[in-house]
Amino acid sequence: AQKITQTQPGMFVQEKEAVTLDCTYDTSDPSYGLFWYKQPSSGEMIFLIYQGSYDQQNATEGRYSLNFQKARKSANLVISASQLGDSAMYFCAMREEPNQAGTALIFGKGTTLSVSS
Amino acid sequence: DAGVTQSPTHLIKTRGQQVTLRCSPISGHKSVSWYQQVLGQGPQFIFQYYEKEERGRGNFPDRFSARQFPNYSSELNVNALLLGDSALYLCASSSGLASSYNEQFFGPGTRLTVL
Image 1 (tube, helix red, strand yellow):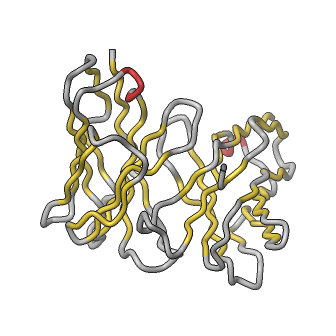
Image 2 (cartoon, helix red, strand yellow):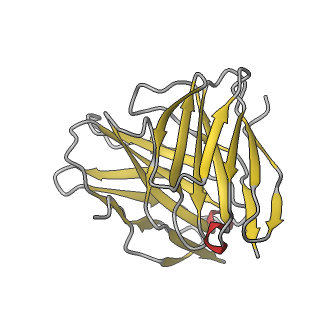
């Protein structure tokens, strides 16, 4: 069974608008972390934001915020005031703890975001 | 400070050959993880090494092996290459192992093409 589900293969948004990228996860572990990464065409994975399962407040990092709904097991990324440079692939990932594979990240299939002027 | 570095950037091999990919973590980081990213998919975990010991292994065949050196750099080896091994191989380093929040910093990747 998929542990991280990203149901939007592609999203389109205009500059300066906000966009929400969806992510749902599946785990029975009470302690886990959720991550969002950005991957431009160059290939490097860029860390954006982190949410711990015990965190009471939604994480925010500049224009990025994470809409964490624990009961629904969703961790949507909200990008405010989109910029052309935001065009990239976005991945949601989870790390469970304890984890048989150390601190391995489990990634979703990603969402391609295209920002137009 | 230098980020995670990987070499080579690109590599072309033929089926049946062997390949070695290299990764240098961020200075001070003791944990290195390897991921395989097939085109159009998210990265899949292959190995994690911490303090030169294997701490985790993903669902990959024994053709894949890795090691970590005393300076914490790492090599990923793939034997008997198959066409399906064509992918972007990403290395990530982190300072520790224990907590659920342990930010992993990724390198630029090595793009392997198997013909």
